[in-house]
Image (cartoon, rainbow, N blue to C red; front, side, top):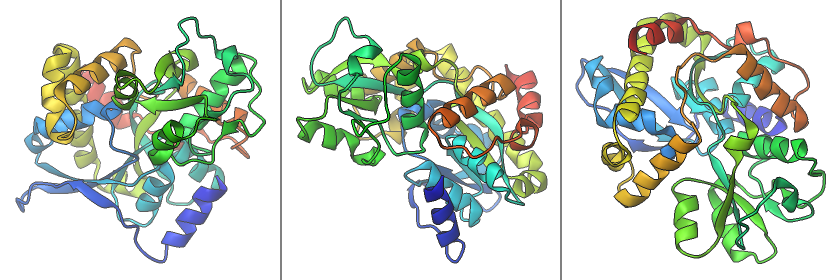
Length: 335
């Protein structure tokens, strides 16, 4: 939380620099949405299907997508107005509400409903139990981020002590896999797909558990924007969410191979077989939201997870942090 405060404060004097990875259509008649994503992952498949199938174009929207490399950086982009909408863990929005920001960000649509990471071990453990991690070195992700907090919640619920240095939150998400592979002292690491399956296929480690299955339905990734942006661009935000839901519907209506083909443009360096395996893995754990509406009980569980990690100084008000008015409209139309 402190890191988020420092990052936002530092950027208010200048704009965050995010590397664009997908461009919007250059036609002047399209409404351009600058979308900042927390990372580029198949875990967000409905978004990429919507882009590649041109569902946004159907509504006259062009997407300018940038990878911010962390929820704290996405929120900084929103705060500095260098992004219109952010795709990130909703914990960043909660932090802003607890801090009392005036033009605060609002969650207007949920994308994933479970943690998308898998616990990978150096050695095979066919009878793995969460208690097996007691006293072992685990690369958990950035302190205060959803991957680390959700894993800590799962371990604590299983009675595992995470108070020591073995629960390692010092390694940034984007270098965790390399750190795990190169350090024989590390016993476990969390990985998203297709990295987890590819790591296992290469004989470097073994997938032993799904964090998402163990944690339950946590609102893991959502779309947020400043309340002023939503108020001033309600029709555009509604069409944006319509395109996302159509992407989800496409995934539900087609087999994994067809979905992988629709994702191919967004992951040009990833084999179709890996994309297909990732789609299957996320379907198996019911990772994607059946509706963009964020339920209050899910929001409460989110804050339970954050509080368990010692990252909350107060609770955010669901009625202020979440605006389901657009999501309810879109769900009624398309689901």
